Image (cartoon, rainbow, N blue to C red; front, side):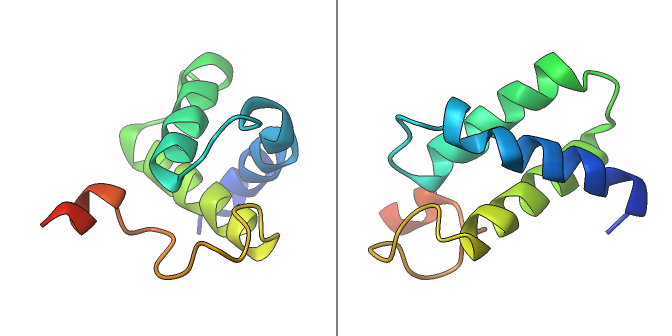
Length: 83
C-alpha cells in the first residue's frame, strides 16, 4: 500500500460510523466510501481510489463494522453471489 494513502484511509475509516450508519451490506459501503472520496479527495487517480476503498474496507472488517453475520471475503462483490 502506498504510504501517502494511509492518512486518507484512516480519515475515511474514522468517519465511517457517520456516513455508513444506514448501510446494510458491503456493496453499499463501497459506494458510500467512493462518494466520500469523490467529495473529499477528487484528485485521487482511479488506481488510488481503488486502493483507498480496499484499505477502508479492510479497516472496517478488522473493526468488525459489519458484525459477525457477515463472513467471507470482504472484497468480493455482492453481485458475484447471484451467479
